[in-house]
Each structure stands twice: as C-alpha cells, then as structure tokens.
Length: 142
Image: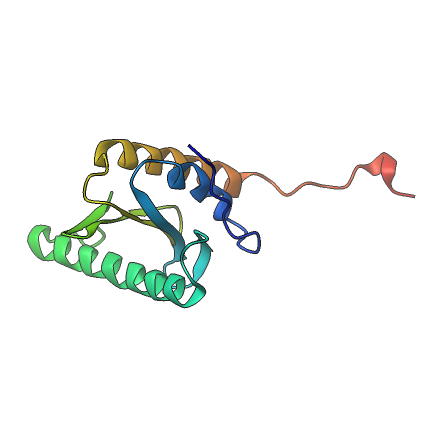
C-alpha cells in the first residue's frame, strides 16, 4: 500500500490521506456547507473537486430536507448520505460546523471500513479545529 499525497495547498487535506489509503477509495473532498473546496485528493482535478464540493452541499441539503419531510424534525442530525451506482459509492458525512467530507469508492469497497475511517478522520479534524492557536513564547520575543 502506498501513501497518496494530498494537495499541499489544501489546508485541511491531511484528513484525506488515511482515507485515500483504503482499498477501493478513488477520491475524497472536504467541502464547506456552501460548496467550496477545503481539501481534495490529488487525482481529482480542481474543476472536478469544485463540482464535487458544490454537489456535496446540495446533496446534504437535499438529504436534510428529505429527512425532515419524513420526520417533521426541523434540523435532523444527518450521520451519512450514501449514493450507490454501478460505478461505486459516493458517501458524504458531516465533518463539523459547516463542513462535510465526501468520498467516492469502487463498488467492491468495504463500506463498513470506509465509514469507520471517515468517522475517525472527522474526529481528528474536530480536535484540530478546536485546538487553540499557538502563542509565541514570551521568552523568545525581544
């Protein structure tokens, strides 16, 4: 198994590395709630990553509205949205405030392993985003 590097210019893309190492995972994107790319896998071109991010926001909004239609819950707590096609699986999970993690995997991929690792990476992202900013050492300042 080889590690695929994520784009260096994508600040949160480190979250994707363990996901991209899973068998059958083709691409992954971190997207904001309004459809902007926060990080993407290297094999996915910029234009494709931007389309995926926009569709991730749309898909998540539709899934919330769909769930609300069935349950009358105003703000349903989505855990994941899965789209299955003959080409594979598109999976979207919430990844914190106004952020989602989207992934595309082959039809033969082990969805249980992928879903688990997505949750592990979401937790790591939450910890990283909650960490306080580093302050300069007082002794190091002149």
